[in-house]
Length: 262
Image: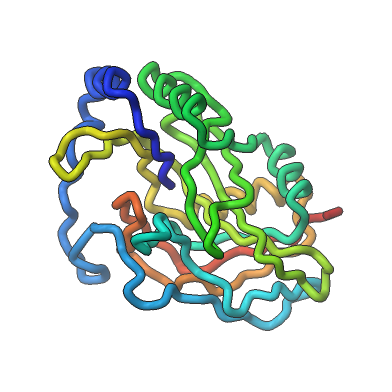
């Protein structure tokens, strides 16, 4: 989802000069017969939906019931982020090793140095395969693991975040990490209350299920999936909005991957 960067004014001005389309405000989408009439980020005025478990499948029984089904983009304002659409049973090290096997990298932490490197890469349309990923929140904290796969330039990448639920599958004995997966497709400009440019963010591909399925397919192809369990997530939607104002649609389910050898 969002890879929020607060650019220094000269860098932001150069970015706008070289990418004029990025500075054009996105028009508010019209309502459809299957979705809401607004594209503003959603706030959790009611409790965030939680998951309900399905029956145990095969060799795994993920402790799924009651887990959050959607991330927060901002804990203070309760703006909702991307949906929880993927989960992995394993250890943090085995998750990182599995993604390394399929060519993904661990994202650099957010820091002034790395933020500036990302901003300059965006200006120059260059590669930065371990660029920082902005924080989303579950369980009152930012993600424990963030991984990515760049698609030719820093503006386009596959990425996912994972949180340790502190729950363990009673069948596999493995820790359960839940996460969100989406694909960044462009860099856009953030604006303050006065409409002035204040930084940049990534725009996501609205088909978040495709990213979930891509990850599962790559892990399967690499022989890293011992079991795959479908679980309910936030529910089907054709017109949801994340914390960055991007629309997305989903079948509302999550895929739980049990890693081999974890």
